[in-house]
Image (cartoon, rainbow over all chains, first blue to last red; front, side):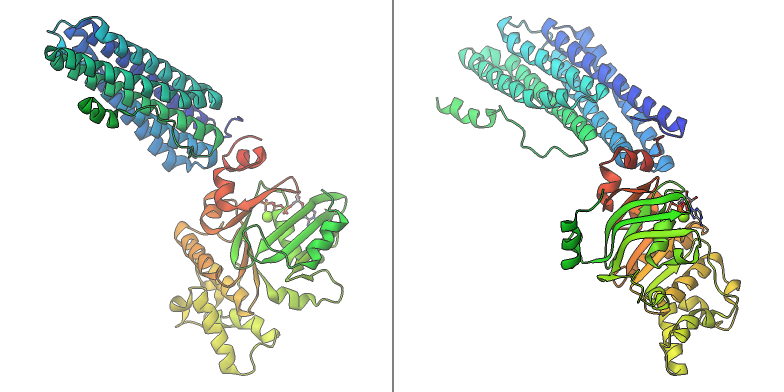
Length: 238
Length: 273
Ligand SMILES: Nc1ncnc2c1ncn2[C@@H]1O[C@H](COP(=O)(O)OP(=O)(O)OP(=O)(O)O)[C@@H](O)[C@H]1O
Ligand SMILES: [Mg+2]
């Protein structure tokens, strides 16, 4: 891509990208810490994680202000306008990811007193690992404007959905086996749902990267691997 | 970019239709313009639809005005200038030797960058064209044309009480709308505008843009502009010229959202090409 004739315009875009990348990094860390707090039942880490969500919110506001100023000053068009609009959308997805990770950390606080049997966490750990990888790849795709990589992320979201599915089943089984698990498992279920939602926001990011690079909105139906909404019924009837 | 004989015949046989299915009003085929040795416009092919606004954009010196002047044969007045290729309006070759250039210029009005009212009254500025083209038989017919033209140009309420005042005493924006009234008074089909707002303030510009938007229902309007925002606001199609060639032409929305050619993208987004 050629440089703008007005040098400060390029500098503004660089700053926008830098803030977005910074937000992405924070969101990744928030998710990792939230899960670690849950797994280790570490209330201190949970509290610190909840507090750090603030900085993501602050960054989102900064990006928004800069973007609005750029639109007013530069009247961007074509790929420049797409650039600004996708940054706005992506940072709002990152803000949501931060919120969802924060919710996981809140669950960690709620269950910190309870002892949880190890295998209970396995599914959730897998989900977190996959969600982390998805988020990392989506952010990499953004910074390198890599449509191929963004498309891979987009397709892999079905895997996270499928994993959520099986974690859902698994936790349901634990609850049916021993009602004393219900309290803990319910929190973990919410945690799993939050990770699944993080996956959806990550897919949004991938779609926006595709739009940024190709200039056409992704209209394909997302591949879906989640059928938990119908599973409640089958669990009850079985 | 030479057209094959078959395509050329095809273009002549059927009434040309633009991509959107609108009838093409002005059709250019392999148009070249030379100023002496200088090849200023190169192999331009374009179909310009009727009843709509087409914007010509491109860096200074790329040939926008040159092409615009081909459409009403204003280049004839430049001694060193030579035009080749074919331009038709309503399928009629405008470089046909039997064509009356005065008639052509009545059908193809032009509005310039700097408002250039005649040093005459507001009334006479507008009445001049209809008079020389014999469009009014009586004084009241002439008055009706002048009134209607000033109304269409959105100037009537501002000047109706001082039609006898000099046109040059109006503000810049009013002068430009007077020039538009003068252009439409002779009932043209095509209106060419070469940077019509570049000397106007934002309010006068907005008025002229509103006027263009109203006129497009009845005229084929071609506007040269250096303001991307203006092109995006007023036109339905946009043509990008670069170094004498027509690089890309298409629906304005597409040109300003996803241009196909790198040169177009660089130009509209303000990048070094
Ligand atoms: N009368 C002339 N004699 C010689 N060369 C000319 C003449 N008019 C234009 N040219 C040359 O032809 C080329 C195209 O000029 P033209 O005026 O069409 O450009 P333009 O796109 O309208 O530019 P601008 O945006 O500055 O008005 C330029 O290189 C210009 O110097
Ligand atoms: Mg010009």
